[in-house]
Image 1: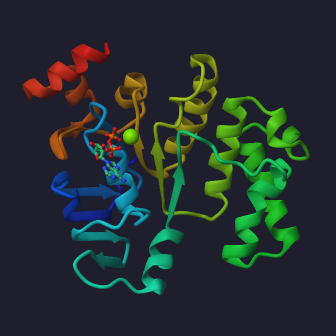
Image 2: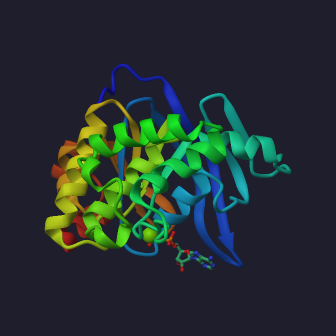
Amino acid sequence: MTLTAGNTLISLKALSKHYGTHTVLDRIDLEVKSGEVLAIIGPSGSGKSTLLRCINYLEPPDGGSVTIGTTTIDATKPVERAELSGLRRRVGMVFQSFNLFPHMSVLRNVSLAQERVLGRSRREADERSMQLLTRVGLADKAGQFPVRCSGGQQQRIAIARALALDPEVMLFDEPTSALDPELGLEVLAVMRELAESGMTMIVVTHEMGFAENVSDTVMIMADGHIVEKGPSAEVMRNPQQERTRRFLRAVH
Ligand code: ADP
Ligand code: MG
């Protein structure tokens, strides 16, 4: 939400991904500034999830490069483990399915990776987890098991868990798609607060309200291409491309 302040934090150059002969990402060039909130919208199968997964190398791209901060990974060269863990540590990810550990308390769910990945003591990790659970409005659920939480609460816990590793950027892949609208709203409120706090975010979403009102920039994808990208109000209210107009008509 602070577009003017940011330097480029994420830079994708000619990023490509193929499955067999199917080109899912076709030489994507993209820059995201520090503090920018980018919403990615577009029809199903257009490559949105693949793009997010290639940014943190959950899915290795097969052409181009990904730069986050000072780390660049060139997809055409062998990747070193240290580079990969450096990149992943900078990137938090939230999926449509929350994937919390069912046999651990909410607090342990948020603390575990802090101990394993960042080497924090249990006390330090739990303290940070409590701060984050408070931030997402769930301090009172710390001792509960996830099954006792609603879908919206579970997704907010997943957001706290991702934030606990102090990422520089947060990627969201349709974080509200599995939720009833009412529960989606509480997740969107947490995401809005995060955006307003200056977090750099890339959000794949079907929530046109979020795209228009919270994100700085909207990008439309179709068939592995960027169809259109620009300031959110302009793209949402006055799209330049016929493909964008068609998509927006279909979802409104
Ligand atoms: P979106 O998130 O926009 O719906 P995806 O990135 O999930 O799109 O998928 C883009 C295309 O890539 C789709 O045609 C999908 O079938 C294909 N695809 C995604 N993952 C795989 C995979 N692991 N193997 C083969 N094809 C895949
Ligand atoms: Mg998807």
